[in-house]
Length: 183
Image 1 (cartoon, one colour):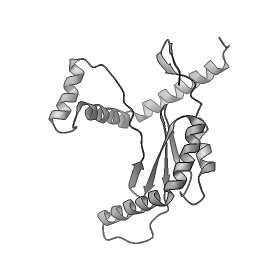
Image 2 (spheres, rainbow, N blue to C red; image 1 turned 90 degrees about the vertical axis):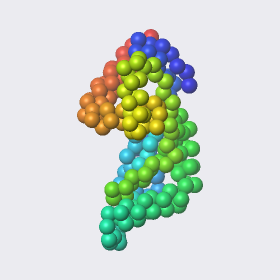
Image 3 (cartoon, one colour; image 1 turned 180 degrees about the vertical axis):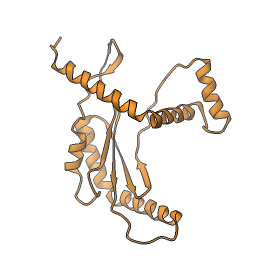
């Protein structure tokens, strides 16, 4: 993968578009795996495919028992579909040049498996490092790396609407660039 510098910083180029990934997975996955189309999330390194499994039929005495049954059903799905998921992932990785991760949801339980953890380097000044160190010292996180991941998840959870608008605006800019003259 080649990288080049532009006015916004380093950009990855030569990565195939994955705009059609949700449709591709919808058409490629075996019937009966999920109750509907899976949720397909794409970034620069990974495609995450998470589907909803058919509902459990049995009654359970409490929420803990139901959660255990849901987790067990997800584990069974993971084992039963392993070989076929590997083959589908291999095809998708060739097509999109990104790793493929999987997950399943049932009821209130969602589990992700084979997910990628990508390193991200950043430079922080002392006030930002102190925030991370406070989270570590308070036991919220085990390390600065965990603390940084925790803060990113927190911001993402509280700013999802804004982030969605930003992604849509970036997509429009990409469309305009594609329509522009070639340099």
